[in-house]
Amino acid sequence: MNVLVTGGAGYIGIHTCVALLEKGHTVIVADNFCNSTVDSVNKAMEITSKEIVFYHIDVTDEQALESIFSQHKIDGVIHFAGLKAVGESIMLPLTYYFNNIVSTMLLAKVCLKHQVNRFIFSSSATVYGEQKVPFIETLEPLPTTNPYGETKAMSERILTDIAKANPTFSVSLLRYFNPIGAHPSGLIGEAPNGIPNNLMPYITQVASGKREKLSVFGNDFFTVDGTGVRDYIHVMDLAEGHVAALDNLTAGVHIYNLGTGQGTSVLQLIQAFEEANRLEIPYEIVNRRPGDISSSYANVSKAKRELSWTAKHDITAMCRDAWRFENNREQIKIR
Image (cartoon, rainbow, N blue to C red; front, side, top):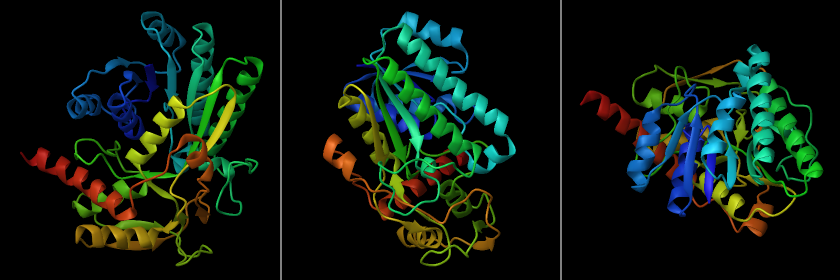
């Protein structure tokens, strides 16, 4: 298939591009580089020895989208393009609602115009809000604690309504949990611009000496050690989940959790990273962040049953691959 990957130069997007290319698909990337660089696209082509067609556009630009669909016969879309930081979304709600909602609506509009009926949406476990864990797909989404989560829930509703009105339009809503790790080559991984919003790149930057210590947000949650519990999934497992969803997409709307089904606390992740890489990560406990919930991990039986997909990497592999990527980046800079 010819697959358009929006936000395809970003962390999850570029790993999915690699997985798509390795399964024989042709990849077209659209990205505005707001939290990525063209270097990741070049590295993905180096890993796979295959070409990626690339467009430097913003997915909220309908005319630019129209140009891509006019130049290529697109068979399916995987939509990653969107802002994704929970804390930032609380400070910049209008930016998040505009970027994340408008991009989804315009992309769906252009898909319908060009009869592109396979649409994979990058959603989030955030739509579950704070409910009993493990989260299962039959749970009703709750009003979330932050604008980022609301944009995901709204986009899900928009795509569901479009599919109801257009029976040939098939949608897979992938609610995934906390991707970490990197491609085992060490060539691509999570490299955010500026201060990381996610835990693992902050840990690796502390390990490399870029940052003095890690801030652990809260130790008074109702969890095993008081710190937040999340379902960490290796980014390549997540990428392969997207390919499985695309290859198995049938008519209608399908919702899948992509995670490991296991919860890991912040302190447990720090310990796992230290043990996997024989490093010490200094940290301090600080106040909770607005919008954070205590526990989030998945019931993943549906994805296993319907997509024949399960996560393969354990937390040690995630930590080793994340550090290999960060260490590789530092060595390249030194040279």
